[in-house]
Amino acid sequence: MTKISHCFQSLRDRSQCALIPFITAGDPDLATTAQALRVLDKSGADMIELGVPYSDPLADGPTIQAAATRALQQGVRLDDVLAIVKEVSPDLNAPIILFTYYNPILNRGIESFLQQIAAVGVEGLVVPDLPLEEAESLIKPAAEIGIEVILLVAPTSPKERIEAIANQSQGFIYLVSVTGVTGMRDQVASRVPDLLEQMQTVTDKPIGVGFGISAPEQARQVKYWGADAVIVGSAFVKRLAEGTPAEGLLSIGEFCQSLKLAISDGE
Image (cartoon, rainbow, N blue to C red; front, top):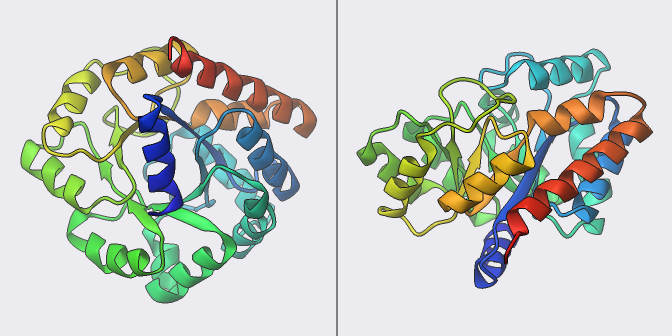
């Protein structure tokens, strides 16, 4: 059992919901990214999603796009991100899930890329522009070296496609709560409970809900609807970028704790 699957199994045994924060590597700088990973790990994160800065981020809203642009302008590249993971991952309890687009993977070669990320301690992989029809070419070699490729389900997906994605996805299934890009929203989409219910009829794999969750009460609502994980990105990225790095680190630590408390209430 991989570290991600083991984490979900342990949480399910205790009837708990996972918290998965997202940050962009290299924003505001690489040293702060390393500290942020440690802060999140100590503040209630069950897994951490680490975004690789990319020049054409199709799924990212303005907050994460801006963070990626700042990181790229500082010269942050994939090798820098992997160096940070190698430095920090031995100290973390939370598995690191790398979020990257498909082009950097193809550029390095699938086998080479997977070997490199496995060597530094990455446990999971989210590739938002990888279509189901091409996923096997990545999922199969990844599984052989212990990397779980997590696939996304769009809120517009028909039931047959949801079932096909659920069958292929490893570790958990990432349910995108809104049609569109990432970003903070005042309310979580009302379709989420219906989608969760529909997905739970075709799979027993854990389901994480992301895109648009920006407050503890929203996280609590998603957990109440039956999600196995709550994924929060833009709200963390925004807090980490505000003020000095020290202020940003303090802010994300407090926010992480508040989210974890919200989804742990009554358990």
